Length: 582
Image (cartoon, rainbow, N blue to C red; front, side, top):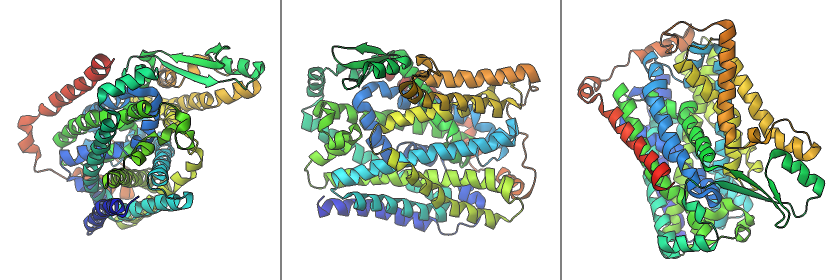
C-alpha cells in the first residue's frame, strides 16, 4: 500500500487515540470509569452504541456472509437490533437505570439469584471475546490482502491495535471510550461510503449489478424474502457418508453430486431478527452506554439515534457482499478461496491514490471502537459481578477501579485464543451458530424475568437447559456424520430454527419450574428494589443513585418524543425488509 495511504491510516486513527489518552486524565472514581459519571447526552450514547455494534468484522465478515445470503441478512440489523434497542431502552434497562445498577448482570441476581448473575457474566465473556476474535481475523485479512503484509507482520499489527486500545480504555474508562467511538464513527462512515460508491462505479452502476447477478443465477440475493438453499458438494463421499449427512435433513441430488438444504425465507428472517434482538439486551457494551445517559429521556432518545444510523448504514455495509458476488461470482478465485475475503479483495482492486488509506482507516477505526468497548464492558462485568461480589468484597473504590483497568487487556487478550479457528472462513455462520447456543437462552431469561412472574429458581435452570440444547445442537452434525448417531431431528439442528427453539425450550423450562414451585408476587419483575448488600458494591450503587441531571426538568415537555421517534424508525426498518425488499 502506498505511503500516502499509510499516512491517512495513521493520522486519522493516531489522532483519535491521542485524544482518547487526553480524555483519560483525571479519572479518579469507579462511577466515572464504569458509567462516565452519568453525564453522556443521547447523541453520544446513540452513536457510541452504533460504533460498538458495527466493527471491523461487520465490514469484512458480514460481507463474506452476504456474499451468499445477500439481502436475507438485512432483518438482523434493520429490524432485530433496533427492536432490541427499543425493548432495552423503554422496558428492560429502565428499572436497572433507576436502581443505579452498573451492569445488566446485576439485574439477574435481583430477579433470579447470584448464580444467574455469574452465568450471565461468563456467557458474555465467552460470546464477546469470540466477536473480538472475528474482528481480529477481519483486521488480519485487511492487512494481508489490502496492505500486502506477511502473516507475521499482519498478526503483529493486530496485536498492536489491541494493545493501544487496551491502554487508552484502561486509563480513560467509558467516557474516553464513548467519545472516541463518536469520532471513530465518523471515520467508519466516510470509509464505508467511499468504498461502496467506488465499487459501484467499478461495476457500472446498480442496473449492471442486477444484470451480473442474474447472469450468475444469484438474483435471489436482492430479496429478503427468498428461501435460503445451502449446497454441500458430496462428489467425493461414499454412499454411507452421504446417508449419514442426510440424517440432518436435506435432499441428495445424485446427478449434481450435492446435498441441498432449503430453509424457508420466513424462518431465516425470524431467526435473524431474534439474533439481532438479542444483541442490545444481552450485550453489556450496550447497557453500559445506556446506563451512562445523563437522564432517562437521553437513554430513550439514544435508541432512535442508534437505530436510524444502523438501518441506513447497514445497506451500504451489507450490500458490499452482494456487490462482491456480482464482481467475482466464483468464490474459488478469491484469496484462499474464502468468501470472507471478498471485502478486502474489492478494496485491493481499487487503485485510486488515497482511497485504500481511507477504507483501511475506517476498518482500523471500527476495530478500535470495538476493542475498547468490549474490553471496558467485560472488565466491568468481571470486576463487579464476579470479583467484587464473590472474591474480594470489602475494599476501597480505588482498588476496584484498578482491577477494572487491569482486566481490560486480559479480556482482550482472551480473544486471540479463538482466532486460529476462524481463518478457514465462514465467520458469520460460526457466529450465527454460537449465538443461538448461549446468547438466546440468556436473552430468554432477561425477557421472562422482566415480563413474567416466573419463579426465582427458574432463571438458572432455564439458562442451563437452553444452553444444554445449544451445545447438543452444535455437536449433532459431528455425531451424525462420524458415527451415524441422531441426537436431534434435523429441524432442531437448523441454524435459523435454532433461535426459535432455544427461546422456546428455555422459556418452557422456566414455566415448568414456576408451575411446580409457584409464581412470584406481582411487582417482582422490576426488581428495582434491589440493593447490593455490602461493601463497595453497595456504596458505589448508592453514589450513582444520588447523581441527578439538570436536564431532566427541561426534557419533560418532550417526554413522548423518544417513543414516537422509536416507533417511526422501527417501522422504517420493517417496511424496507418485509415489503420493499421482500
